[in-house]
Amino acid sequence: MNFSALHQQVKQQTDASLLQLIEELPDYAPSLKAAMRHALLAGGKRMRPLLVHVVGNTLDVPKKDQIAISMAIECVHAYSLVHDDLPAMDDDDLRRGMPTCHIAFDEATAILAGDALQTLGFSILADSPMSEYGDAHRAKLLSILAKSAGYLGMCGGQAIDLASTGKTIDIEALKTLHTLKTGALLRACVEMIATVCSTLDKEAETDLMLFANNIGLAFQVQDDILDVEGSNESLGKPAGSDEALGKNTFPAKLGLSGAKDELATLHENALQALARLPYNTDSLIAFSELLVKRDH
Amino acid sequence: MNFSALHQQVKQQTDASLLQLIEELPDYAPSLKAAMRHALLAGGKRMRPLLVHVVGNTLDVPKKDQIAISMAIECVHAYSLVHDDLPAMDDDDLRRGMPTCHIAFDEATAILAGDALQTLGFSILADSPMSEYGDAHRAKLLSILAKSAGYLGMCGGQAIDLASTGKTIDIEALKTLHTLKTGALLRACVEMIATVCSTLDKEAETDLMLFANNIGLAFQVQDDILDVEGSNESLGKPAGSDEALGKNTFPAKLGLSGAKDELATLHENALQALARLPYNTDSLIAFSELLVKRDH
Image 1 (spheres, each protein chain N blue to C red):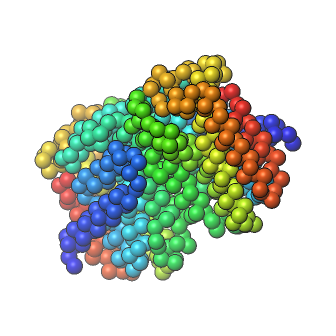
Image 2 (image 1 turned 135 degrees about the horizontal axis):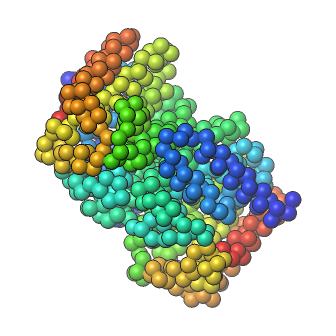
Image 3 (image 1 turned 30 degrees about the vertical axis):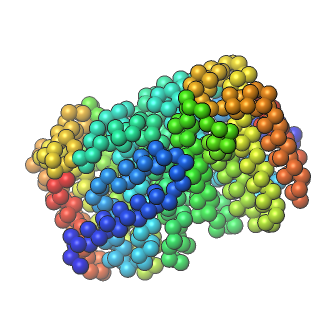
């Protein structure tokens, strides 16, 4: 299967599994259920599930472990987008060309939907069928998910982002911000797969995590570049919104060309880490290419 | 130790442990850290930690398992209060006589603090030191916490509450609402302790959960009664706010005297379940008394 077909397959499988999960919930809170469905199924690129499956296939991790991990991560990612879009946060009306959750429903429902989606991520990881080896490592997986999502990861990064918006921060602080805000959850995709791989040696794990750290930051640099260069149509949201909000970004800090150099360096670091791995890393290389060359 | 001294001890231990946990977080997001501290340490009664310790002592569960469970539960409870108080939800400015989180900080920080506190609850349960038996049952504990906090528990109840505010619902729907919104997390305290008790037989577990279900609902009935009968001073927030908000409550549904009858029935059911347990249940009886006779 070529990489683009794999991405399509992961997207379809993730959409179908998440839809089923939501449909199975009882109907006693129909607005909340609909808002959770909206947030989970509004056309995401499923980059995190793709990363989980690509790393999982490379390390020969059982499919059901890959599925549990990717669904849990995607729920946490979806919750973060719902809350980031709220009026008190980034106040975005559109995401992926669709009304954001608080626009499609209301603010209270969007807050609750985000809350319940975060919980759902932990539920999935605690309860989904996994391999025997995966099952024995569930608590560790839950620990990684929590660490990457909370103050030590995504929430901490978002708080630094809020606090530094409209102010000038240095490039190291900007890297810390994005390493936490975007990088932590991407890193968790790789770390969780590494956790359920029974054959990974220490050295390979180190290189794999180096790959994860570099693509995690590269993802955000490319996001910042797209916000400058992209069109409203390709992005599915207004381009230039970072600048309008006074956000600290890599192009604002380094210039557009400096940001592209930074992206190229991160990409190169990721590829060098992959080159040292004792696996066929073709699909990991393809993932890195997709990440730095995407137009939305 | 008498029951009131035990409650004081649990309160002090919980406050100290939670404070330490927050202080140990790095300082890169100082507002978020301060908001989490505010939310966790603004004078809660620590009824859930008390319940965990009372049931844990009764079943002879190791102290460190009790501590991990009670701290995790309290983080999830604190997050729910922060989000419930938001302008888009109940729009409360005061809680326990103190400014609510979005008043003391701002709305964005309060949303994030709630988010990060939910995650912290899962982190604690995934990472805190536990007994060997507790450690072997971590994934189950995390599953119980997630189920009680999410759509199938607290978030679902809150969504029903939002959807039914200003409308008339029947008594069964009101019970479902509160069984989820308030009861689920109280029930989880007992269920988690039962999970890490290596000696509990099936019959005793059934009675223990019957006790938990009844006190879970009783807690909310008493809350509703206090909102009618209590003073601003004893409650630390404006009395009568349920009626002002058009909330469905037990007194609104059954009259004040009917609500008190309901409370007495639930209390009696809880005591009957306790009477069947092969343990010294004095402190569980005292907990039930405290719950139905508290004035705030």
